[in-house]
Each structure stands twice: as C-alpha cells, then as structure tokens.
Length: 136
View 1: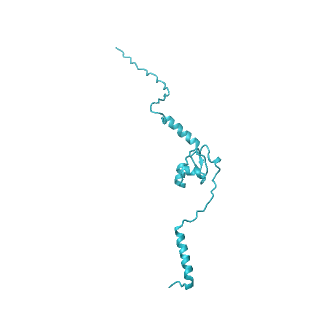
View 2: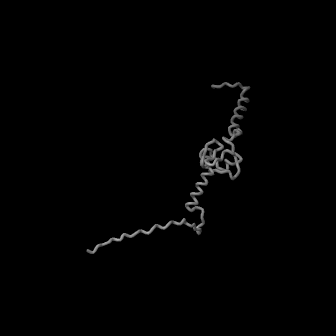
View 3: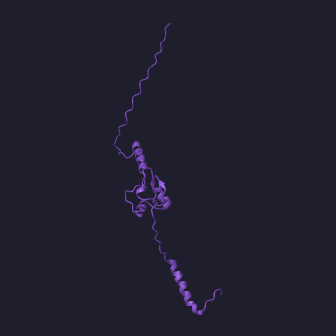
C-alpha cells in the first residue's frame, strides 16, 4: 500500500531482497591492515623498561598490559610481531632486582640445601658493676 511496485519489477525486487537476506548469514570479509610497530624491535628493550610494540607505552612488565589493554597473550604478541621465543616480557634491570631479592630471601633452593649465614660479630661482654660496700 505504501510502496507501489509494478508487476514487471516484482521479480527484481524478490531477487534483491533474497540476495540481501542471504548476505546476512555470511561473515564480512576481513580487512587486512598492516600495523607497524610503535618502535623498532631492537630499540624496544631498554635496561629499565620495555616498550610495547602495539602502542609505544613503556613498561617494566609487559604481560599484564598485553592482556588487559590488547587482549593478547605473550605468545600471541611474539607471533604477531615475529619475535623470538626468548624475547623478554620484563625489563632486564627489573628482572635482576627481583632475582636478587628472591635469592636473598632463599627462594629457588632445594629443601635440604643450607646457606651459610654471614658471621655475626660477637657482642662485647657486658662489664659487671661491682659495688663497693664500705663496712663501717
């Protein structure tokens, strides 16, 4: 009633509607976008931080940032940017500091291992006070 279609155009209208409805079930073709890294891979690892290749942010630890901001695992990140399997996810100085702290508190030792404790200097003996009592 609102749209008038001539008898000759009904077949064309049906084909157009059919094609539109058939296309709804199909996934749209993915558009390939080539993303360039925010910095070069070589300059992304510094002693005090690692630069995220996705957005250029400087981080001490990259794993949580990748998960929360980009929805990626470290393996996905390495695969996307064609990084080696040993590419660090933690800044080198931060890793060294954490390692030193772990060794200091005794982590990483086997149960039976003993660590020689540093010698503690003996405290000097207390001088006793001798009271002189006069017997007068």
